[in-house]
Image (spheres, rainbow, N blue to C red):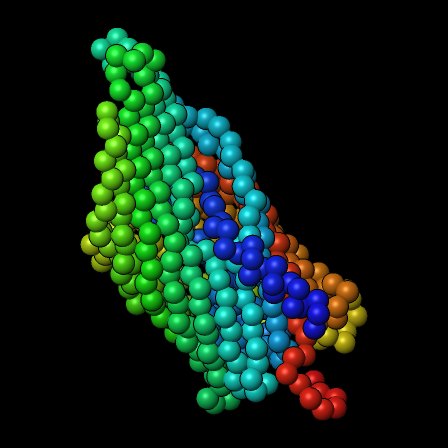
Amino acid sequence: MKKLRLLLLGLLLLSFSNAMAQSFYSSRGVGIVRYFVSGRGVGMGGVGLSISGPLTVNYINPAAIVAHPLTTITGNFFHESVSLNGTALNGSISDTNVGGFQFVVPIQRNFLAIALGLVPYTSIEYAFVSQGTFKGVPFNERISGDGGVNIGFFSFAFKPIERLYVGAMGMLYFGNLRNFWRVDFETREFVDIRDEVRRGFTAGGIRGGFILHLSKRWSVAGVYSPSVNLNANRSIRLRFGEVDNFGENKDIDLPKAYGFGTSFMLGKLLAAADVYFEKWSEVENSNGFVNDSKRIAFGVEYSGRGSFEASYFSRVALRAGIYYRDLGLEEPAGAKVTELFGTFGLGLPIKWRASRLDFAIEAGRRGSLSSNPIKETVVRITGTITIGERWFYRGGRINR
């Protein structure tokens, strides 16, 4: 229990550092939406809406927490490297950060559970530098932005009938988005320009989900969350010869979202597929998103389903998958921005018997030079540590 408490404290402190996804396309709207189901699912193409079980902590479908027999804490970390290629831009960037945490408590084993956690939802991190002249005077121009939207959540799930899990999640959206424009002239004949727009916001939201086990091998699932209006307070600071500060309210809308998933187990092989939609086309204040976003994923896992008492190698998992995503953006107008990624993952038991390390590598491209100004080649490494222990338990042996 001491190990679990220390890990929980560390993650609470670290997770409030916003996770960045550095990208040319994060300059649009609220940034790039981060889709994360579970550490296990990342290596399977990001699937997992219908996958539940011990040490599989689901961040999208709240119904899955019913399947945890032990008090469970999980934390996620990632490293991302991006290579940018375009007609007028070439370069590379990288980032390492915390990807959120979740704490699950089974109130009544295999019937009722609660959870709380924190996870990044969107992120902005970009900077563009250029040189030019104005009336023969050289200048340096820099446009940049940072920040993002985080979600703090509380989940509740139960099993109303055999083979059916139902869950609900209350969510608090919060964060800051900052955009900067700076122009420095190489002579005092012209006044340098500073332009900063800062938006801070909070809002509440909900999400519902279910998992239906049609048989011992086959499961289906669904999730739904209504649209959310972020109550944004915008602060603007301009400097053009003098400083002018003022504030105004300009709300940001996030779309309704829904998804479906299925998984099937055949011997030691688990296969799963998910589809997830975000209805940006129905949002008025989308700030750059003009099309519906959709994500289609397929993945497999071999072995890795031994019980806590089984041998080490019977609990090791090998995973692979693929996914396609339309981000909902157009750059330029009429040209959709899409992603195509392949994934590979590994699940390793660690020295505490009810614990696991999940590693995954995602590699693919965002955008295309044939239709977009920038093609980004992305390699992302994700690590997840999950620890289960008996809390709030008095008495003798628990029969598994």
